[in-house]
Image 1: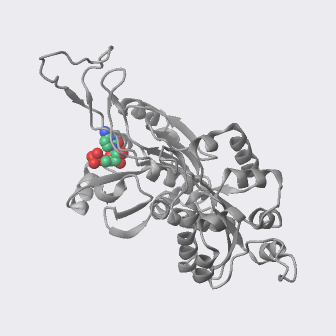
Image 2: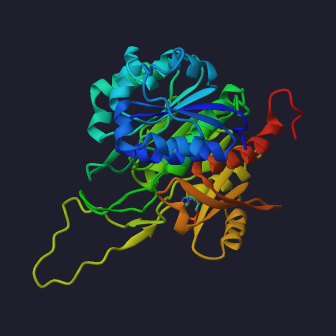
Image 3: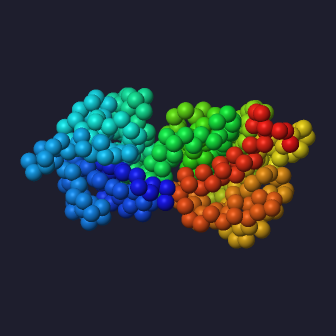
Length: 412
Ligand code: C5P
């Protein structure tokens, strides 16, 4: 329980996602933290303070001017806290934080606090994209506030977009990551990590493509954690609707061929390459220059496919000809049956160091995953965990696999 004994203030502000704050509180408690809750007035309309009293054993702070409180509650809360997490955080509260306003218990406590603050925004996607919010987020980030999400998904309005609050598990993982970072777990300092993420789109004509359901979240989690742990990180991303993580170079591509070119041109510089992308195995042989039309009475056209290069296998092959076993290569295997056997086969065939095997039913779209880490001499099931926590497990292997050539260490 990595939050054992930590004092966490959970700020809850007035978004529909406030109901999920109860799960955040529960997860914090489950990981050993002591939790005090502060709520804005609007949040109390969306979730009852009694819910948090029941969960944490203490009534939340809902009023800065409670006459029965013998002191200044926001000052006391800030003094008590090791970290503050605000979930959900509205555009309004992000603006208050950026401008130093302190009219509610959440923003007043943050203004009194100089430790780590994690913000989990939740709002309509247009509010998130608005220039005012962008500027407020940038101001807050420049002052050291950390953000987790928002993520792409269905919003309260019924529309889809980037604005949905990260899932409670991911928020608490991010908080753990933030606290770990503070306790200087920068064990990937000096390593250069190249991560591919997302699907590829293989164009059929100017408006259609063949694609797959990969969301890019696994690659994003690996890149963010590698960055937090001190690595210099580049993501080569297929078409995903995720916001670029701060402090990471993001190269956007569409097709497998573009991804191959982007990776090939950067492979020499990498200490490790993690192929988390779901690269299409095939592409249409021909790209129609005009939109393919249906015409009366004609049969449906068939699409002739050709093989795409296997980027990872290409990297394995290229590495064979090198004097040293660098970069460290990590592949993924999404399977529906015989997970381990398929991963072991892939490990040998593609000549890589680690294959992360997961079941198709959990691999895509969600924030959670469950995998088996397959190496030449070991098979390690991870159990169910967040993509962020899985990223850390993968990076632990990567760290050990790239450590031998640390400056000053004996060459193997
Ligand atoms: O063979 P399979 O597609 O199952 O292998 C998956 C692994 O190989 C992933 O790491 C994926 O990123 C990589 N891959 C690749 N190029 C392809 C297909 C898969 O690099 N054309």
